[in-house]
Image 1: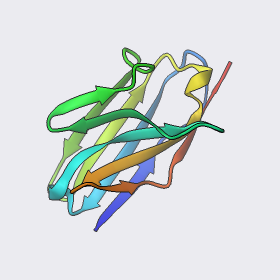
Image 2: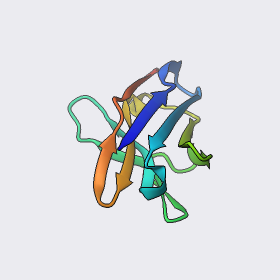
Image 3: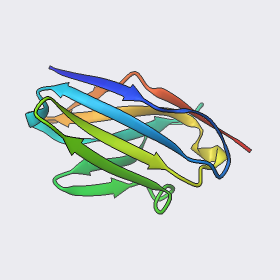
Length: 116
């Protein structure tokens, strides 16, 4: 069992910054990967950034602008997505994702809106 609590998101002007957080609790010792996906209206859900096996992968569209970091204690594992130089095309619902033994677990999503 895994529980995901997302925070952050909101409305920001182009060029601004936001930070998303996702805290996972439960069977965190079994987590293989953790990160963020996003889905814009009318588009498929896509990877934004994820940590797996000690390495971090980023979508090409966010490289150099977004940074994913993580922290862990005995009770939870948290990932932070720092989003800088935001663009209107970054507007989407952002979903926290955890992979445990090839099973995907999703947060409820948080809306990020970037105005031009």
